[in-house]
Amino acid sequence: MTASISRPHDLAVLIGRFQPFHNGHLSLLTQALDLAPRIVVVIGSAFGARSPKVPFDWQECARMMRDAAPESERARILCVPVRDHFDEARWVAAVRGAVAQVLAEHHAAPPASTVLVGHFRDPTRDYLRAFPDWTLHLAEETPIRRASALRGAVFEHPEKGLAGISGEVPASTVRFLREWSARPSFEALRQEAAILREYDIAWSVAPYPPILVTVDCVVKCRDRVLLIQRGHSPGKGLLAVPGGFLEQRESTFQAALRELDEETHLAVPHAMLQACLKGNDVFDRPDRSQRGRTITHGFFFDLGDREPPPIRADDDAAAASWTPIDQLCASEDRFLDDHFQMLDHYLVLLPRQAAL
Image (cartoon, rainbow, N blue to C red; front, top):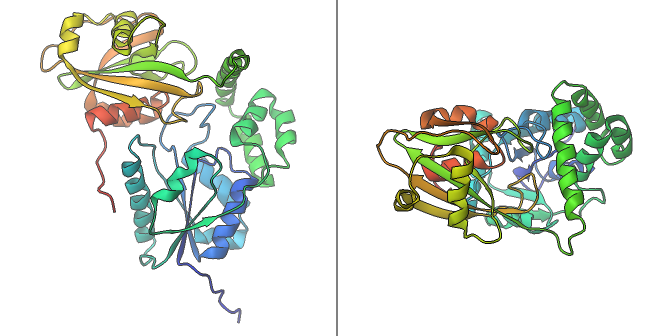
């Protein structure tokens, strides 16, 4: 009979996007398996549209992870998806809720001791401090390129890229990526990645890393909200709220009004829009946009119960529509960047979970 292995914690939690699952992630997973008999892997940025930045859905990330783990250990690994939220307290509550739910689904008792496994690569990992009742196990960072560089190598030249990253990802991930890059949907993502790479090259001559400023407009009327369908990359064909870049000689509010005019020709006088302004917030999560570090100023206009005014798509918008609010959740995976989260912030599309 094999003696049971004593581990210092009841549960280990690992949080990440895993786009793709690489050797750094595998090192963290291996340490988690050594620390607890059961592992919950929280897969972030779930449920959104595929993009060069998040090309894999959460089930594909879970598959890459399980395939990389020893077969004898896979039953110990539970994967759960969590979407992004602007409010960190809400995101923390969602993580805790997801962990508790998956344990309950597997009839596991609440853990007496939980360990969170990770490392502080940069300020985006400050979330590791948001779970003070969990023991934090800090791991050394594995010396490989960031996931963005690994994705970029495959997008730029699939076969050559796969060969180039083979020492930085598990062999099972290489097999998955080879299969994935042969899918018909890969070429559209590859073209989008090439456009984003051109942005990076254009900004590479700047003396400092650029920080872009944009505006976005959530316009509600009755039970509908104003949406556009993007006519150009990045995000061609995806749903978005009207918005765009701030120009040199305008305030953010002036930019919001201009973008509404240019993209939707919204038939509402500017004075009336100002009277209908119900919210103005800054959305500055570092990874919120594919185009790089982009801070957006969100404006929420509530036009009340009047008949939705006429609109006409123009400029960057291929189409514009007054979309029923109760249909938005069903289209979450069709929105550009974090625009669904922005709509949720103002329109309360998803249930609010109390902090645990």
